[in-house]
Image (cartoon, rainbow, N blue to C red; front, side, top):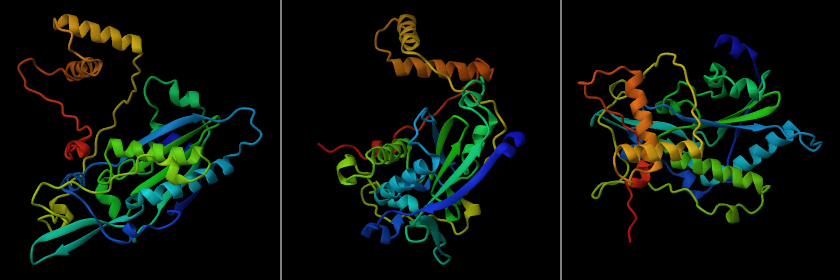
Length: 310
């Protein structure tokens, strides 16, 4: 991994602020129980790889980056908690602490531009994901609690010889996967619209209200006074990583086989693919037949805990 890191050239970094402040951003942003449970979890980190425009004399990387920053500043008006920073208030007498987002302390997102002397094919062709991809994210090993000192949102643009990789690291206490990609889409829509009237672009504004069980209210204190009491870190071993692509034809075949083996017609494509993944995990780990094991996936929990009211 070290040889790849040496090839990356850190060109510049800056901080992007919301284009203008909203009144809500001047108040503490309190976290719900599900958010606080994520403090020891890693940041959400995903990225998209784009080919550079060919034979386009109007394209320039500097102009492209300026447009990204400008559209990001507009998106951050609506996703203002991402520009803050985690803060803690400790009450020794009650033996509790309050972790929340101070939206006035950070008030910005980090934006990094780097270059790498590699092509898109160098990234996409290998069977395993190249280790250099880890360096496309600055928060590769950070956990959400690190948001006390690290930005809650970090955008890293890695410029390849023939492409652009846009990596976004987002603190997981503020967003689940649905909210994460909602941010991506909002930012993209604003950018593509060339900074027009964002009110007409954002058809679905983010929901900042946190869910609480009936009878409870924010803020939610934790029964601890020191992070060592409730924060844990896990250093995973270096593993081979691979992305699998399934064509629509492969999914259809897999679904038909799963239904035939189960003598039913009710198994969906998602269920068939999930079962294949689970069986592959068990087989790869050579788990004994008499040993009980399980696999848990947290999907869309934030919306599931706020049921739609008819």
